Amino acid sequence: MQTATPPSEASRNGILTTLGATVGLAFGPSVIANLTVTAYIPQIEKEFGWLRSDVSFAFSIVAYMIVAMSPLQGLLVDRYGSRRVVLTSIPLFALSLAAIYFTPANIYVYYLLWAIVPVAAIGLWPLGYLQAVTPWFDRKLGLALGCANAGIGVGSVFLPMLVIGPIIARTDSWRHAVLALAALVLFVSWPIVAYCLRVPSAVEIAARKLTAASRSFGLSFRHAMKEPTFWMLNLGFFLLGVTATSLVTQQVPLLRDAGWTPDETTRLQTTFGFGLLFARVAVGFVIDHIFAPRVLTTVSIGGAVACVLYALYPDLGYVSALLIGFLLGAEFDVLAFLIKRYYGNVAYGRIYGVIFGVFYLGSAVGIWALPKLRELSADLSYDNGLYAAAAILLASAVLMAYMPKYRYAAGHGTQPSGAAAPQQA
Image (cartoon, rainbow, N blue to C red):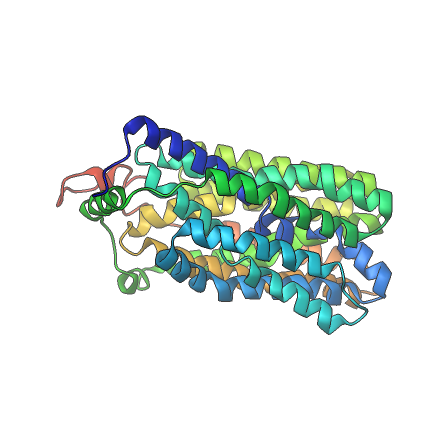
């Protein structure tokens, strides 16, 4: 008969699982197939002579595949558990990256190879790791999830600085950079995650489910869909998706056009990573004290400023990269918070999944559209696209400024059943 893990051992297992999630996310597809791909685009464009919008479209395909894979990831994690799904996905992800090394001068094969990446990495998107962390924590769950999510910021800081930038500078080859990342995923990430990720006993899982059920509150998914805030959040995050991810993927090509060297753009990626990491860590604290939509309004305005600076003053690229890091680092922390405050936790996962998918649908559009607008301009300039992105971010900021007061105040889930929940701004 299974018994509960002693408290000291449970604490140790929780800390190790959080560490494993941090490392896994630092070497995961969120970083390698999304946030650092900007470094490859000029190299691929130069090698094959393809249009920049055509090169970038591969990462639109990645975004579409993320939308398609997200529901399947949830089903696999629910059925087989996070540990099994994650540890199976890591070597498959590494192999899919290694296969990209052999990309021929055929754009359709190039698209196919990148489309395989999010499928092979199906267990490695944040949900898989966060589901592994959640069973080990109660009172410190927010801190644990924040530490795990910070892995994306850590990877965004150090992979360009220590791996991608130096390899591209030394070999002038994006292929070697991707191959090195595949090796790190397989020989560094996999052993650490395999050692650290722990699974609670069936007794502990059952007890946690009973506790969660007793504290459940909020709206069903059907009722949430009738709320104006649901559609405001979907539209707002679609607009953020159109702009934020496209800006990240085009930062290096944009500044290489402006005369920046590979070393300078590597430092810029590191600056972006620091901004993202800072936002991941700080936003969780800030939104406990400041109305969260105001935070999203602020970082959206900062993103609009970054677009204008990129267009008018590319020499201030480090400032722009930092502002975009703040924007991308804050988005999903704020979303996770807002869903609970507006809709409770009854349909939390389903609501989050829908808005997450809408964000990546917007990303797929923006990743292709920004370089396409450059190609349609007479002087091959990003300016028109950057001004359009600034306008879209300002529209998103205005939308978030009109979000109403929370339906559920902090601590609502710990109140006795039937207790009234005051609203807060």
